Image (tube, rainbow, N blue to C red; front, side, top):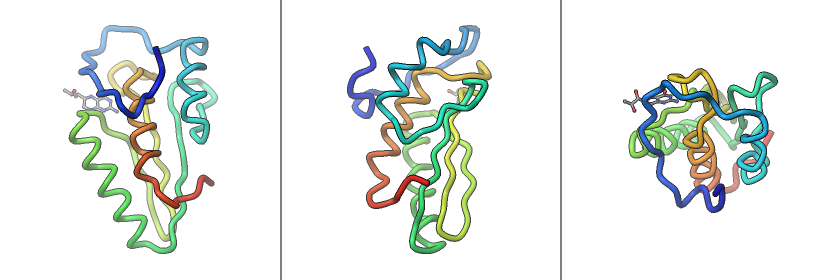
Length: 116
Ligand SMILES: C[C@H](O)[C@H](O)[C@H]1CNC2=NC(N)=NC(=O)C2=N1
């Protein structure tokens, strides 16, 4: 089941399992359509736009809180007016359901941030 990802909770990922295949990724990716699946299907990325640096920073802080709650941590690059969030499960060097749960949760708090 890939429904209602934002209501789900990340499960601990200990590694030792294969990353999601391209076929397995498809139904998850459909639910977070503003995220781009990387060419090698090992990560998803979305850029959010903001009015200024402070708003971008505040967004990064909120994402960090969710990451700590969920125990799953995105890589984030931010600057004036933007934050680019990349999700990958480092332990398996690829995508796990946790990455899509985080993406859906981040989308929920994005507010009026626009996709790039
Ligand atoms: C013990 C703890 O669950 C892990 O070390 C977590 C923490 N956050 C993580 N975040 C991401 N993105 N990938 C991981 O493999 C990962 N591992």
